[in-house]
Every structure is written in C-alpha cells, then in structure tokens.
Amino acid sequence: DSLSGPTTDAAAEPEVGSSVLNPRMTWQWQLQGEIDTSHDVDVYDVDLFDAADEAMTELHGDGRIVICYFSTAYEDWRPDADTWPRAVLGEPLDDWEGERWVDIRDADARTVLTARLDLAVERGCDGVEPDNVTAYRNDSGFDLSPRDQLDFNRYLAVEAHERGLLIGLKNDLEQIPDLVDAFDFAINEQCVEYDECDAYAAFVEAGKPVFGAEYSDDAMGDPAAACATAAASGVNAIILPIELDGSFRVAC
Figure 1 (spheres, rainbow, N blue to C red):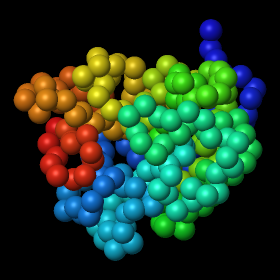
Figure 2 (cartoon, rainbow, N blue to C red):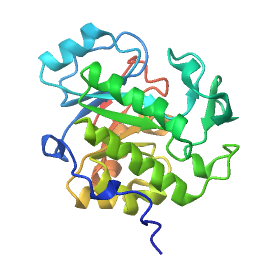
Figure 3 (cartoon, rainbow, N blue to C red):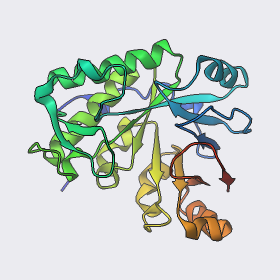
Figure 4 (cartoon, helix red, strand yellow):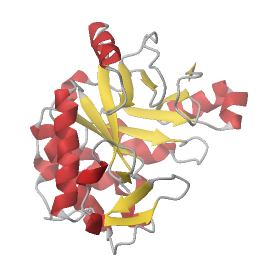
C-alpha cells in the first residue's frame, strides 16, 4: 500500500513557481568546469557552489531557468563541510570519494541543508536539484525506513517552496507515486539504459517536466534510438558525459 502518511504536511504545500515549467522544456546539465552558456535551452542545471556568478547572470539574462544542484550527503570539499555534526555522518557513498551518507532524520543535519537552500536563494537560483535522496536504499550506516525517506524528501520540498524555489525529485523511482505532488519536476539518470523511463508516468500525467540524462556507449552509438525511447515515455533526454563537465552534449 502507499507509503504516504502524516509524517509532514509537505505534500499539501503549494507548488511554488510550477507554472513556469512545462513538459516540453529543453535542458542542459553541467556540474563541472567553466559553464558553456551557449546552448539554446529553457533550463540549465548547475552546481550550487561552483557555478560562477558571471555564468548565473548570463543565463538569467538569456531568459534561462537556473536549477542549482547540491548533494544531501556530506562532501568533504564543500565550504560548509565543517558545519555538519560529526554524529550525523554515516558510511561512505560507493565510488564517490570524500562523500558520506548522513542521518536524514536529524534536525542538525537538516539545518545544514536548509542553509544550502538559503544559499540557493542568495545566488539567484530559480530551483534546486537535491541529490542522493535515496539513503534508505543504501548502506548509509543508519536504520532508515522508506517512511524516513519520504518525510525527508517532503521536508526538502516544503523548505524549498517556502523560499520560492522550484524543486526536482532525483532518481527516487519507487517513491514517485507518493512524492509527485510535492515536487515540480523530476531528474533521471539512465532510464533508457535501465529500462525505467515508464516509472515517470505520474510526473508526465501531472504535466511536470521529466529531465533525463544518458551516459552509456549504447546511447552515444545510437542517439536516435535512445532519444526515441525516452520521448515515448515523456522524458526530455540528453546524452552527456558522466562527468557532467560540458565536454559534449547530444540533444534529442
């Protein structure tokens, strides 16, 4: 049965700014390197900490919607790394050096993340893309339940909306039915590669954009087929380097 419950009032919050988005919007995603602002797309997704002020100004001047990426996990190189209480730090993320899961139930951990939302407002972001919102399905070092994750993800949505920010749901496929009403858009990695694009039907039916990225050699070898598969499920896909460094982009 549904995992939704009375853990928070987030799902009932108004979806601030949703009217500025539509399912046909195009996007570019670059989290590393000097941002290439030349792509004629509706939405840019850039790093909250690393995107240069000049790039943010140029993108807004060109009429782009700017989404800012941040992780909900601890990253030892970020300028706010020292603000994480040591007690909330869990196991390392697989294959991501310097990153650790955190106890998403902890109020002090949430305070660090709401400060990141405040930074997003300060930097002029139109919305945010919180990453690593599936701690309950990983070896986090904490006994996290699906309900804990739902409560945390809804918490992020409420806090973003209270600040006038759009917010996207990243990759949390199993909880989409319970979270679609709380989020303004979705971001997926490799739904074509893993045959998961149909999982976003609830976002598509709600008229909310689903932005997809494919990294595989198969997608690069036959971009038309990858794009067609994504489009058939309502996913707005692009083919990118897994480093998200702007070194190439294949548009669908």
